[in-house]
Length: 266
Image 1 (cartoon, rainbow, N blue to C red):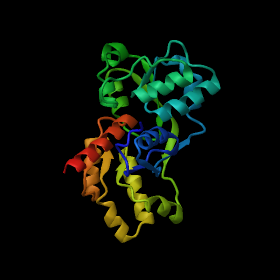
Image 2 (cartoon, rainbow, N blue to C red):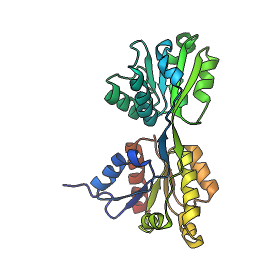
Image 3 (spheres, rainbow, N blue to C red):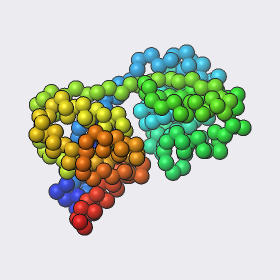
């Protein structure tokens, strides 16, 4: 028998188009409706530090910041040859580790346990000073982003280089296209980064009138960090803001269920 725990509930999924399917499937399998509204577009960079890729065998560690970093980083690496056998592979989370193994056949050597972020990764025994001093790291990532990981590795005596293999962009929607999605009146919105929150606000201000914007501030949100929750409050959101345990699809889905349960009980 199908689980109808989300019957009648419409969940706005803001993940990039190629990363939304799993969460959408979870929602529909539980009789909910998934409304896709990608607020970030992932664009591969055509020339991701070719010198780094060609000299990959001179590095000791390769760090992949996200599943997108895995996908586009491996494309760049495999276009030039193969992953050096001695290169230790590091991912921030399980989703990236799974994608790495699926695309390359290699398991990640280092994956954090618990929270999937730079802070947790830096506590791993394999990245302590005695293991990384005078070692060479290449970090595959999108354009920009946090500097914590690289700065701390350098503090521990490592040499760190970035290979930026994709960039995040604001998607373009026509008024008709955006209105078609928004008019379906999502009950709750899922967001997985501060950039996603920022882009959602930009898009809504581009395409919604004042009355519609007033409704936006009362939409419940699922976010993935306390920082995002504070940013949403500062932006003007006034209804429930739930913080998922992780940025994974399962954690987002569980937070939606928790929100629904809380509202049924209230």
